[in-house]
Amino acid sequence: MPLKFRKVKISDERYESAAAFDVNNDGHLDIVSGGWWYEGPDFKTRHRVGEVRAEGEYYDDFSTIPMDINGNGLTDFVTGGWWGDTIRWRENPGDSGREWPEHIIARTGNVETTRAWDVDRDGRPEIVPNTPNGPLAVFKLSGPGRFDRHVIRAEPQGHGLGFGDISGSGRGDFVLYNGWLEAPEKPFEQEWAWHPEFDLGSASVPIIVADVNGDGLADLIVGQSHEYGLDRWEQARAADGSRTWVKHPIDPFNSQYHDLHWVDIDGDGRPELVTGKRYRAHCGNDPGSDDDIGIYYFKWNGESFSKQVVTYGPSDESAGLGICSQVVDLNGDELPDILAPGKDGLHVFFQIPT
Picture 1 (tube, rainbow, N blue to C red):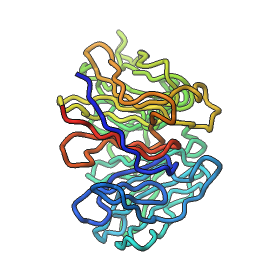
Picture 2 (picture 1 turned 135 degrees about the vertical axis):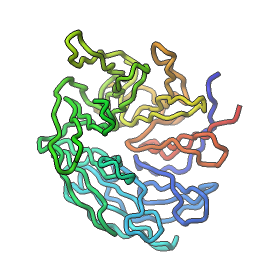
Picture 3 (picture 1 turned 30 degrees about the vertical axis):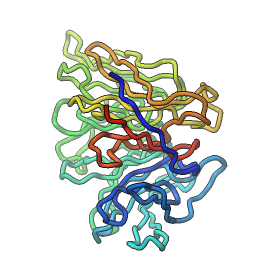
């Protein structure tokens, strides 16, 4: 039976990124979003993080990646944005009454959003920004407050970024909107092979890499961030052994699928696709921008995806997913909840036990 959720509005703030982590080391998850953090377990008390640059309807804050960057036992976070042209980290001061100092990691050019993946398989994630107008570069934490930059591909990335084992080598490959990069044995020393095998359009971040149908070949799940459409690209083999990709629509009727999660939300041991519309992604200038907004999960039924609605309706009644959301058990009941920031406010959808 479909899951049920209870909607709670945490704040009217319009930041599009949020994450849950234990800010004050009290054993409870807190919510960090933009210029504020909200103290768990009830998230009613908020504390100042610091000033965030505003640009019209946007804030220059397109990710919230938890990481103890200076090694002092307190969780900091990585962010970045389109206008500041940098990725940077906010330092947890260990005092709820103090603002979080900001430190520049690197000047990167426009940042669509940023993700963290373990590129070199050492058990620790690296920081990987999607910089549409710049090269694909990975930033590795190499010491307290210090990152090393590794360029994977010098050409501009374009919109969209994913990471996962496409080749079946056991190593993580990168996916861009117009092809994929095959990981060498030593990812920061050797060249990555470029495979221009598809055009995914205004691709989501992330592009999900997963063997959806269990045939031993990794497929792609990609949303159209600034168009209509959500699709699975099935990896297959031609008679001569060459790789082919077959596009299967998942939901062609909704637009602005910018952030995707491949996670077991219903506890059956198999992942589901959790996603939703990014409300006013381009401030009303995208196809479908005036359509109702929603959050959904899609369950693989063995042949296709079945859509289940978490919420759907006008923006003053429903909610969407911003540019960096999270599926996480926020209240400790062992059921995944949905942390949903966006220009429509900061919401949590708590899963209701059945």
